[in-house]
Length: 384
Image (cartoon, rainbow, N blue to C red; front, side, top):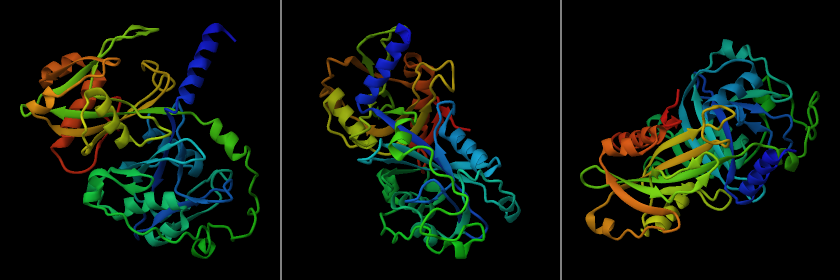
């Protein structure tokens, strides 16, 4: 092992030990013309075999949207036509790293398209079309909450901001938490679908044993990092920026301007809590985050050789609202992190910020002026 490789390994291990890394996944909601949704059987998951199509993010995926398409191509043998992002659900769990789970709408499948599935039998051991009520009972509780929220909420409200499957932020204006359906798992699905194998006490015929145990599998999954930033403006529409204390990196000194905020301590806090903490630490303000304005996926170098990091990042941008002179005069910067702050008109902010950061900021400001959920971005620009 070369010194450089050893250094990269040590940095990666230190990053993972810091608790700032999390997993990412993407699933797809396929509706049909009768108001039902597609669920699939996971032959390798004996405990919770019912899921929606999708799977884990890969570093070569340029975005979760690409993850969703790739997973459907691999699992079901066709290329889906995705619609908007339905939700982003951040979940914490004592037995695995946190997950940023993206769920996308797809265009409805016709019976002919569904009949042409060519599933990978190691990944998909059956499928069924379920009503929202049936899906709510068959899916494991956390996934059930996530899917049920997307099915209950008006499409125009999306993407939904969820925490452990529960609505938060502006989503609470259109979707109140509801009762969790009784979990039944796969019971009765073989009677509902000719493509679902008969329910047995053990694995169905043809199921291969899992290649790895759960802990070994999770340990080998790639990780991302997340940041939570807040957009504050004054009555004149100027944006509050902060300048980071310069530090040395392999690529040289980086003294740059950005929005207030920073890394999410992924193993112990949710993005809203991180935004609240960062504003308190950096500016000495006690402010509750407002609307989630944008979600920006920043690919790592495996997907984009021009990226500035090996690790993909997910940036949450929250609305901090309009701040007055009295509040601005109370700013006390964190001296170990920041050296100054400034209110910037859009033209000045664009000149100070990196292009992708300005594009992200502009998208967040635009989202303030329209209803619905956050903008879905990749590298600062609208996802497509």
